[in-house]
Structure formats: structure tokens, C-alpha cells
Length: 303
Image (cartoon, rainbow, N blue to C red; front, side, top):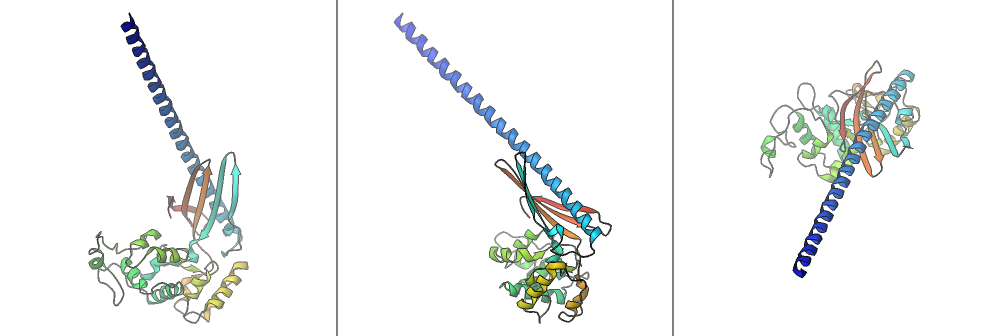
């Protein structure tokens, strides 16, 4: 009887232990499923809120074109959207004029040759940022359609295929700015220094002098110093230049057709926070002459 009672107790303890284990497992699985569902819901909500901010930015750009023929940093679209907290979420956003930056795809002209004026301009920008100006030739080789390295600066397939992780040059226009990190000689520090002042847009896109940073304005001509460039940028920031006469005397005639007072390409950066979840969306927007705005590229988490 004592032995049977002992066995019954052991069995009872095993049953309790198994029941506890099953209950703990079920509770953990339920909690995990609940968190997954909450995360998925937060992701979907964040995307919808980000797309809503994109629609708002498109409306602002449409209204701006109706009210002004120029684009400058004193206009409503250039004002950073203040944080909008509501119903458990937070939305922050900012619009940037992409044509206020140097377009790397302008380094190579429609004939597939390096543009000497744009090469010189990019070299001046690199020097102003304390970056090796020989990088201009390397980037031009990355874009141009041939496989011959430019002299004395340049790098084509013969260089890249010999690296530890071999790859080839695309020999076409750059589509995302992060592609620049794959160019020979581009380290992390140089990339971060250059990032605020360069962009990748369709070739031939003009530079908006009303929104360009002083260092970008400095790169327009050999005779422009940083004090003059800062003065031009400060003048443009208030109401924008009404015309390009201020630049006619300080840049070469071949540069003048590449300058503009308005823009077509803008980038929206919007950050949505729901609880502990956060999502950042980058959207490149094209505003055409009729005022229609459409997204060209959307990325989440990286530029």
C-alpha cells in the first residue's frame, strides 16, 4: 500500500509538472503571437501614416507651384513639419530640394563623355570638403559607358575585379546615392562629408541656386570664395533670387544654362513612432510643370 501510494504521488507530481509546462508554453506562445500581431499592426499603421504624410507633402508642393514660380528656403514647403503627436503615435517630416545639391549623374554628358565643366565643379566641391579631388575621375568612370580608365584618375573593371570581393562598374547612371560607397577611394568619412551636398537625379537636371548650400555655390566658379558663397546663400534664403544675373559675372558662360531658380525633384523624410516601434520613409517626389506630384522612389529605413 505504501509503495502504491508513493507511486501515485510521483505520478501526480509528474502530471502537475507536465500541466505546468504545457500551460507555460501556451502562455509564452500566446504572448509571442500577441507581440507579433502588435508589431505587424504597428508596421501597417506606420506605413499608412507615412503615406499620408507623403500625400500632405504633395499637396504643399502643388500649392507652392500655384503661388510662386521660384523655389527657395523661405517658402512653406521648406519648413520642417513640427512633431504631430496624436492617438498614441508621433509623425515628423521634412522636405528637401534635391536640385539644391550637385547631381553626380551630370558628370557624364549624353555622348557618354566626362563633362569638363561639371568635373571641375565637382573637384572644387571635393576640395572645399577636404576630400581628394581625384575622386571626380573615379566617379565619372563608374558612370561612363566605356571600360577604359580615365587618366590620370579613374578606375574601371580591371581595378574592381581585382579586389577581395570582385565586382564590376555599372557603366550607367547612378540610381541611389548609397551606390557611391562602392566607388574606389570612397571611405565612410568621405561619404558622410559628401552626402549632404550631392544627389543622383536624371542627367541634365539643373542646380537650383536658391536652395544650394554655400559650399555648393562655391563650387560653381574658381573666383568664388566661401565668404561670397555664404553671402549668396543668405540672400537666396530670404526671398530667393528673382533672376540669375548675380551669377552671370562669377561663373563661366557654359555653367549658366545648368542653373535654375526652381525645382522639380524633392525628397520627403518622414519618421513615424508608435509606442516603441519606429519607421522612417524616404520618398523622392517629382513635381511636373502642371503641378502634379508623384513618387519616383520610396525606401524604408535607408536613403
